Image (tube, rainbow, N blue to C red):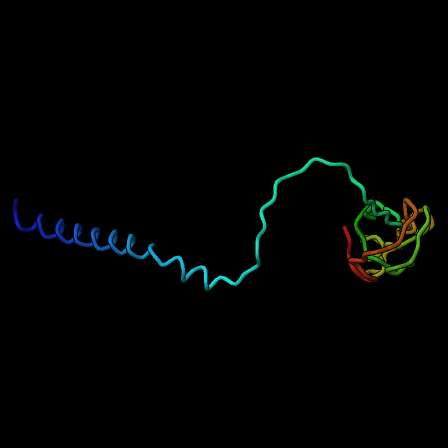
Length: 145
C-alpha cells in the first residue's frame, strides 16, 4: 500500500477511536452524585382503580356560541358615512354604512351629470342579523371592494 492512501486512513481511524472512547467514558457517572443533586418534586407511583364518582361540582353559567357574520359590500366604493361604532348592538335591517360608488365620486370631481334621479350613487349596507359590532376594519373615506 502506498504512503498516500495509508495516512488519511490512519488519521480517520485515530479520530474514530478517540470519538468512541470519549462517548463511552462520558456516559458513565456516579449514581450517588446524581441522586444527591436532584432535590426535585417527589414522585409517587400508583395504579388505576375502577370506582364510582362520589363528589360532583356544579358550576352555574351560560354557554354562548359565537356566530360571526362578516358584512360585505355588494360593489366597490367609498365609505361615505358609518352609522354604527364598535360595541353597538344591531338588528336585522339596521344601516351600518353608506357607500358612495366610484362613478358618483368621479362625476363629482369632473362635474358630469349622470342623472341622479335614476341612480343616486349611494347604497346602504345593512345588518343581516342581530348582534354586536365587534370589529371595524374600515373607516369613513376608505375604499372597499
